[in-house]
Length: 113
Image (cartoon, rainbow, N blue to C red):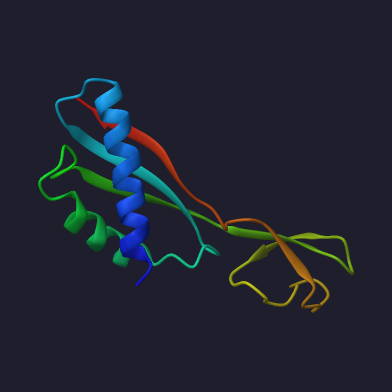
């Protein structure tokens, strides 16, 4: 389960930010997770709760904003929505679609006290 290592990385980033800002606790963490990122949001949420125990982040709300997948089809030149990596272009049926969005995972916002 790679979500555990991702949760640990997010926790480290959030804790570093909270300490730098001299926060007493973290109230909310907002993540953007792309549909094509191979990250399971429910698993990440569970792992985040586990790794946050005993830290400034314990008890913080984790909000996950899904980011739709998007790609560029090489044969027809269209920018298309993608539901999965290596899927077919909905316009021409080609499987030569280069992902251009929805592969990312990022901390968008941290609310601290």
